[in-house]
Length: 187
Image 1 (tube, rainbow, N blue to C red):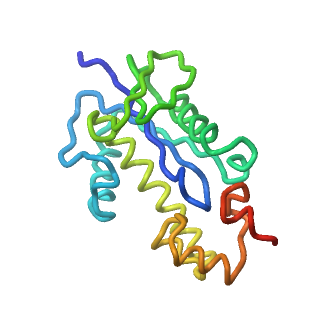
Image 2: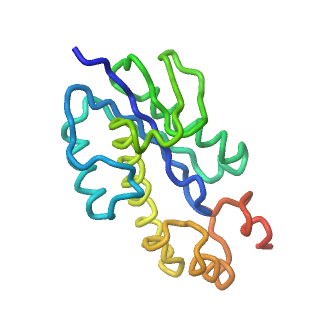
């Protein structure tokens, strides 16, 4: 039997709005065609592959940490917390956890962090895709509530369009108040 590897990745770390989202994915015996780092896929292709991952993976879980908590504990700790939550919600016991990047956390399973794991390890690629598709959907919903910010197009990242919208309309409760340029704006 193949060892069960849980791939873990987070998205939304550099965004000015909304939660940071992590996914943990155990593929098990299955392989999924087209896996790669979510940033290297079109939105349409990411969604298609995410559907296949959801059908075939042995286990998938999501960890979310809100902008309010991010402001309290900082983005690095919030990202780690989101990854921990995702691992804790897996419905199987992996033999190893592979995390994209440098950050590690306490786990009852052996854990390694690998820079660029989202380009090297299929389970991490899958986690990258699942987390990105999930967070993008959250930002689309936020876009419906606040269309003046165009969250569907920039996903909350500090683009020129987003900064202009902040300067014009102010900030909303989902903005991360501890992030520049948000923290420099008086409500």
